[in-house]
Amino acid sequence: GFVMPVWKLNVACYLEKTREFFQKRGQFLAAELEIGTDVVPGPVEVCLPRLGLSADRLYLCLGAAGGEQANEWYPGVPDHPLRGEILEILRSPAADGVAGTVSWSGVVDEHWLVPVEGSADRFLVGATYDREPVSWGPGAWDGTTAAGRAVLEQSAERLFRAGGLGRGVAAVTGQRSGIRAGTRRRQVIAEHHKVYKRIGILNGLGSHGTLAAPAAAQQLHLLNHSRILRY
Image (cartoon, rainbow, N blue to C red; front, side, top):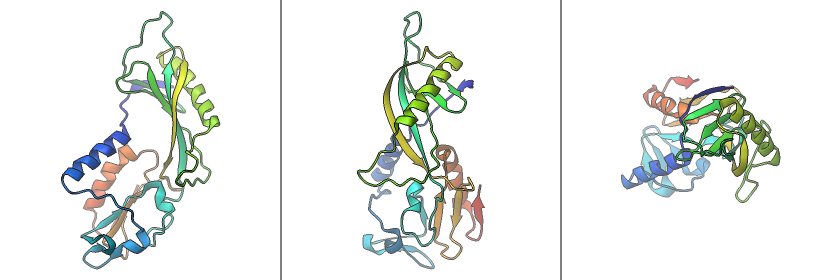
């Protein structure tokens, strides 16, 4: 493994603040949509009659859920969602009993280990890859497993030693999972529909959404309707 300066985006917090920002400007509306029946594309605009809305264009940014919703324009996208798990851990005290210091160093090999912002002794370690088909529903399994926890605890012990960041894991303080919006070609899909030019898609970001999404969205905005971007 190797040690490197790291910064980790708190995605949940970022999304919450982003929603608040656009809500205050009247540019964000939360609503339940049935893509196949609520979206009506036309030659000059896209209408959502049930909500009384219309727009110049509509972009489907559905993430891993896109492959499970009825969607005649981009059915089955993404086609290879991948489940992954992350642990939050507390590291063991240093040998001399001195409290740790806040460091923005992380360690990377098969997995990664990064500090939790504002804490000297809490870290995140992840993430596992499960390539078996996954499907979660309301109130269903949360995606975490004992096997995933064991693998990540072992990796954390190894990464602490490799990075000289501590003596090992004192406790696991949290475990969570998520689904990456992966594709079999491992490519971001950012395009306008070949027939319904007012509908576009941004999906298939896989493990690199926070890095790839801004650039992909900007390129999608600039694309001519007859062109397709996949990367």
